[in-house]
Image (cartoon, rainbow over all chains, first blue to last red; front, side):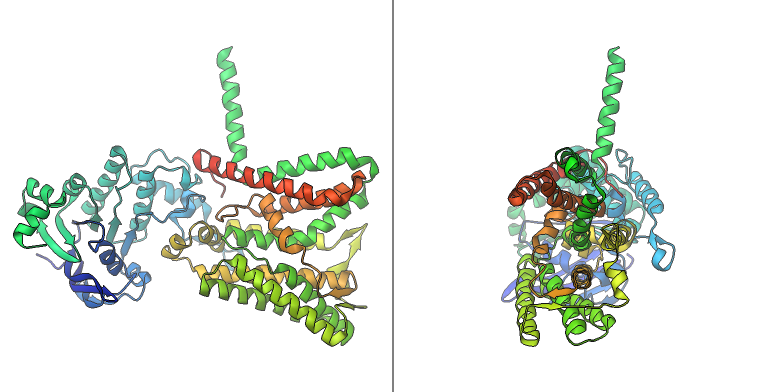
Length: 256
Length: 341
């Protein structure tokens, strides 16, 4: 197998005396979806924060494209093409789709004091990207983001991350607050991003969502890796059992 | 027949939705209604005359120069209650420096502006560093500066009130008058044009909305949140210093304790102008209308001949109405209509 896009080696993180993450190894491969599962408090958020540059690990090493890297801030991670869509999607309800899409990366025309936002390009690109994501209901880029549904907001946030060059996309429970139809749109986006060669890390509680797109699975429990396997290594029933709590199985395997 | 009726109705809904999508439509409509009210009740007593018009425009202009950046700051989710003391301190600096010590007006004007930069930077530093509410930080700096200006003024000149005889070439720039209209009205319009441009047409403008909408989201998107706050706090304090210097030249005197009225009037003008108290939404044109309303009510009441004691009651009522309307318009905007640029 080829070298993963990002690889975490024996990464630990402690807060005071509290060990939130203990020697976790984890990888993300281009064109694959790695599902990260685990209960609240299992260490998922800590792992996401380490991968997106919000906090450094206490011990252990992060490799990106085979080279060791250190993230001093989320900007460092973003510069390498690591995009993170947080649970709250990070969009602003009271400004337009176009203004949200380009927030922090606004294109301008003109020079000097006449340098101004390129509203026409912003509207055109934002609308095209959102349509590409299968969101057809949005017909006007000047529409406020507050008018979008939860799934449309997720789609917009994912489209934004991909447009600005994400090669590794971390999605923190993107389907958690969505209805069936909306979740299907987001799952479809994940599949399409994967097929275009993006590496994805998909955090979810939903077994069927994970199974429908996951290539690799990691189950965290109390800060350690309780199970890590590829899709073909376990039957659907075993995966479902692991994900729906599955403590019995894990304890029997000595993983708890 | 019923089909035609449906279409008319549909057209009306569309027109209404279109209107509600303009963030300053509420304040503009309110300004027209209130102007109409005073035109009827005070028109025959001189409200509509040239002097009457100049009266409310002059009042609105000085308030508006400060209310515009205060509005931007509120869109970015912060308050500035230190503007009052900056006005007083700037006016006493110009009066003391030029009237008492005889220094060149350009120098004292420059010192007053530097005071604005300093106060703005101080407010921004405290807010950014401590993440204390700007409400309390700027309230504290308002008191710090008010006391200091008064103390120093009495120490140096023996009075809180210092006269300024000649402002030489700054006189026409800051205090010219044509048919009763002060040149400050022009400065107000310039300030409005600049702020509108910044808010609608620049990257910084987009960041102002973002910082007020959700500072964490803005930061994660790469917006320099602390720098946005710094620029806005300085912008506000410099505008207040400008008004202080302007009033010193215009009234030929500086007063260390003057200007405290601006502390709440600017915030009121911004809210009546449709700026959300919680930040993230508002427009410069709205704030201009909000300020105009304040001026019309202040002067209009005088022309009706009714006791002006009731002015604050009137303003308070307007403020309640404005806050309620803002919330409704925000709900409508999020629920179905389209955003502005």
